[in-house]
Image (cartoon, rainbow, N blue to C red; front, side, top):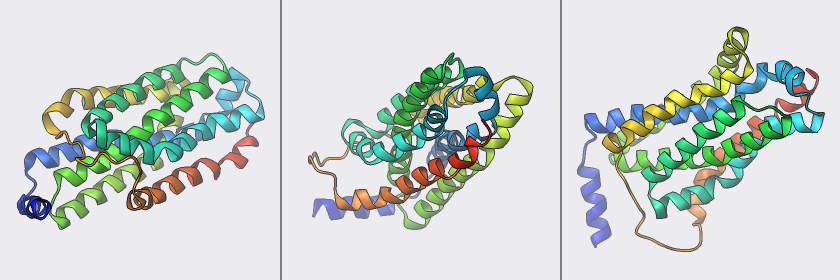
Length: 239
């Protein structure tokens, strides 16, 4: 009965200015997720000249980010339910910025691969946290559907903008600066998140991940894996 009353109370709440401002704030890490999937596509020739990676190392530079996100997405969602979704978002965003700085100043292919792995681990905390916070902030079905639509649009926008942003920064500054785009976004998120985003922990402390949670995240896992694999055969020809 208590659960039914809580759901009914949630459905009666209409999202206000704070919730929509929070959604705008959540757009920042969502754009970053998509941006880093495609950011390297025009940077590969410059990377090959400066770092001289082998063909295998180049594949890992491209694929490590998407593979880590796809592999840890469900686990990080469960961690957010236990530790706190806003807390995980902020910690993951800070780690994402630190890994981005590491990638920007990489002096070897191995260092850049390690940075991309760390970016993937940090990125795996961002996607489930942003989606979960949207479900907490927007209780009414039509508002939640609109909010998730905005979230998906920001993710797609980040993927589309990746080659453009990476190519422009490469032309004017160098390939390392393409990774530093994340830093101001993360700074804004860390400052504003305590004021605009609610904290939430799941009351259920079960050990196993539910099948429903798995199947909700499965399309995003497949999306990240496919996005990582699809360009790699063409990228080798650039070396």
